[in-house]
Image (cartoon, rainbow, N blue to C red; front, top):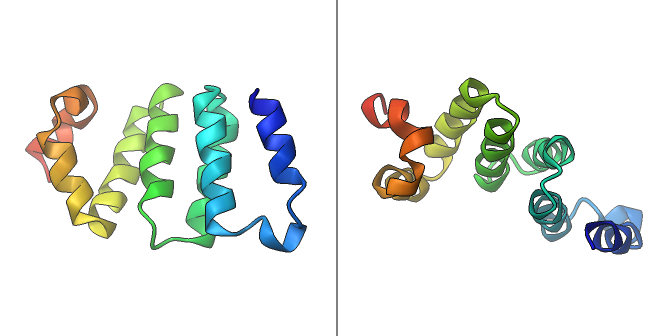
Length: 108
């Protein structure tokens, strides 16, 4: 199913593929399919094109964590915290994120 969804995104005219919505859909599709290296690359593209959006950092951090690169994930989360204070507040209060954010909670 992910391949079909990605194929549909490829049908979008090339000049529109870098639109924020298209890039976010690509990230969501790849993450849903657990295709972590490709999802990470899509997050990197989103961060390059839209560095002011925390989404590329947050989802990129999740991909890195899934790839066993948690230390790198923490660095991306610190950037996301700087971009989106609301995300930081939510993350620090979410018990489901304790395993990932334990160090960050002690060292904001």
